Structures are given as C-alpha cells and as structure tokens.
Length: 416
Image (cartoon, rainbow, N blue to C red; front, side, top):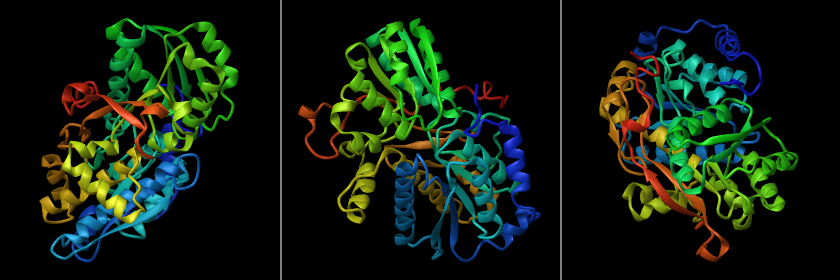
C-alpha cells in the first residue's frame, strides 16, 4: 500500500515499539479489571489530534462525543451509572497515541476507547487496546484495521473505510465524467488506501490512469503539480488528501483554472474545509461523506443530533467527522445498555448483536470484522447562487445504502 504511516517508518516496528515500550507496566488481566469496573462512572477514553493539521475535524469529534455522553446520562445512564469522556491529544502521531491510550487504560482505568483521525494512528491505538483486552471503537478511515493482521475481538470500526468511501464516489463520477483519471495522493496510509478504493471501483468502468502524483502530508504549494496534471489531460482528477491539504488543493486548483478542464473529486469532501474555503473554490467539486446535516429532512436521528448540537453550540450544525465522534460513543453506550454491564465479553456480544440508529438510519457491526455497515453519501458542493444559508453548502447527489456488498468480503480480509 506504499507509505504505511505518517512518520515514514515501518508501521509494524512503530506499533510494536509504541505499544510495548511506551509504558513499561504490566497490564492487569482483563478479568480482574472487569471485576472492579462494574461500579462508578463508565469511562470512555478519546484520543484524537486536537492539535495539528486535523485539529478542526478532531475538535468537532470531541464536541459531538460529549453530546452522546450527555444524552446517555440525561436518560439515566446504566442503572444510575453515568458516562465520562476522557479526551487526550494524540497529536496525529502513532507513538503519542499509543502512549495516551496506555495511560488511559492503566492510569485512568477506562472501560472503552474510541477516537483517532488517521489510518496509522488508529492502528497504533488498536494495537494497545487488543494487547490490553480493551474494546476500541475507531472513528477514522482505514481498510487495514478490519484485516486479520490488525483485527482482534476487541476491535470495532464505526468509521467508514476507504473501500466503501472511494468506491461510492468512484461509481458515481467515473460513468458520468469520463475514463481518463489522474491521481493526486497524500503519501501516507489514508491517501494510498483511498486511491486503491478508487482503482478497484474503476475496474468496472474501464478507467485509464493517466498520472499519479504523491505529496507529503502538510503540503502548502500544490501549483507545481498542476502543469503535469494538465498535460495528462484527465477527465477526472481524484485528490486523495484531507484537512488543510484539501482546502489548499481546491483553492489553488481553482486559481489555476483546473476546474475548467476536468472534474475534481475527493474521497471525503469535508464540511469544515468547505466552510473555511467558501463556495467559489469548492463549486462543482464532488466527494463522499458519512454525514451531512441536511439528512435531518429524512431521519429523526439526524434531527436529534443537529438539535442537540444547535442548542449547545450557538445554532451551528455538526460536521461529518464530528458526527462520527457522536456515533462512535453512541454505539458503545447503546452496547452498554443492551449488555446491562460494562463487562468486556458481554459488551462484545452485545455490540455484535446491536442494531442502532445514531444519526442517519440503522447500522450494525458485521460479525467477522466488526465494521459498521452503513450508508455513504456522495456530495457536490453548491455554487453561491444555490446556497440558501450559512450551512447549506452541499447537495446529496447519491447515497450508497448500508449493505454488505459494498464491503470487502470476510475471506478477502483474511477471516476465513
């Protein structure tokens, strides 16, 4: 898959070093932790990159996760036991994330972990969680976390994965806009896994890949890439990057005139970056999403989330990745209610049997890999003339339904 983590070192070496060496204390066996964990607050550790290039998205994950905790507590909790969210800054660094996860488990005695906003960072947290026997519900995009090498019975994945997300966008844009495709890819796990998802989806349409360019995370000047992209004459430019990189790409591509020559699509079209960039740069750009606040017209659960967010945060609406923070914590707390306990094995069984509607209709965790089977939205950014309010920024042009057929098979993931 190319570069396997942000720090450009061996992912396996990093995970082993971070998970085994960051904290030297030997963990108490899971059954002993469970025996002493059935009273007091239900603690959910929440490591996310609240500093760094993804901080805007991560901070909204925290806000929305707090809403899920508040809803659970306002409804009485678990027989009076209330939930607590313990937020830690993982600084978008796998080693830092491993350290924070270990501290949350060993020092803060959390019952569960949730969070992360990078493919490599979540794999580091997952490594710690599975070695310590703690349930971890990840809310970031990753294909690897569901594969046998990284998966364990403690691993759950509320986030979309690149196969789902890029597949949904690719199946929409390729038949509509043409077969000649260029790729601009952030050179780490997220970028490479997303590009693979587009390539897999493109096979059905006979796409012709005319160019691939890789860039480092945190690239500020994309204009040097554009003459090569223009010379390749693609019908579609697929840009597999995230956060501020997305905003910089769109602004500079618009200034350079690329949108007059080709369609631009991202695997994930970020609400936060569209608000920061305004309608002009993003006009006519396509991308995927797990959530858009406009779903409240169709789903009462979306309106429930939006209304709670508006009431607490000055009439604003939740972002897509913010909503994942809500859904990740919501699913864990629904599992607690179903299990009637925070006991790990009882919780795993409850989550595997759970059908829940956090914010956009029914979801469930597939048994073999604990991937949340859910819908994927395909969005187009609206031009200024169609924008009716501050947050009316996207049109939902397609919805991939919550069906197993859009996931890689269990056997393909190594689960037999």
